[in-house]
Image 1 (cartoon, rainbow, N blue to C red):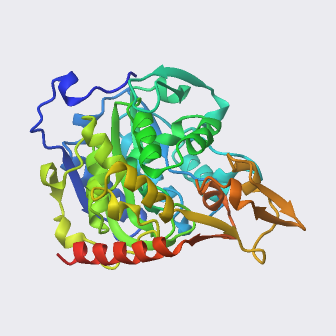
Image 2 (image 1 turned 180 degrees about the vertical axis):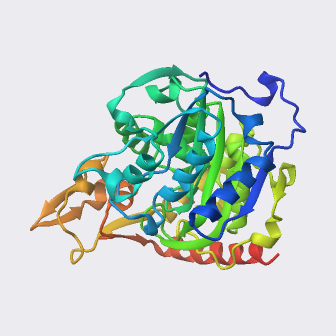
Length: 405
């Protein structure tokens, strides 16, 4: 697998309209899932038109470090993954499911339900860090090379199964950001350390995304996450499967369904600018359900409201304003169990145990929110400066106007 090319470099028609399928799926019941998944493939041209028998397919799930059951909506639901695998196995393809996860306190694949789900359909489930990573040169904007997991590079195709969620740093997380899990955990922490601003971090995410060209995305939006995602938000029923061969278009449609302007999401606008996909809703062919009929009302966005200013401020002023809008993690002592997960994951090494409780040194904090993401006990809350609170309120008002326009 090699890096992608821009529209100009690849000769792709700039008027190309990618197809995204919106299919209703009200529950994780087996029969409901199976029908919705099969319909999604049919709307995209049929399983046989997308995948060939004998193909080696790597299935990238969205699995975060918190040890959490499926109903927390942190990970792609294992029932969703199992039924996707079952549908694909009818094509006689070779499947491997995986992600890069930390085994700090046992096997997180057990808690999340993946061990059982993959065993039920006899498909291998792997932790990518056990198989190694290979260097891939890319013409990135922030990176000139990335290290991608061997099982991915040895596959013919990547099936991307993200979860629709908010994100307290990047605003929204979906198909583009899910590819970040294909690089080593240590380099992911370096990314947070080196690119501490949302716009810069998002450009780096697009660099990594560009290294994995052959993808098909089926997004689990049956139950998504709202609020302070990707792990500390609240489950929100959406009742959809959103799919397509253009991951950027899938993210655009998904974000629009929950009330965002897709071009205010850095990963989407950046990927489109590089010719890696289409993020402009007006240039996407949506099949199945109509977007306006499945939009989610009153979906609660993250307090990180910097997207409000995305296209309204000069870059230097944006840098200042985004600094005022940052969220700062703070430990809630009553909930802290001293498990040390936040200490192990902090790229700036600013967390320590004091009197049996974690404490964050705010002076050294780079606001990457890795500690907030990894905490299994919701013992880390996010606080915001006054300007950030005002902007968050304005962003929610803007979102309400978009949703009701």
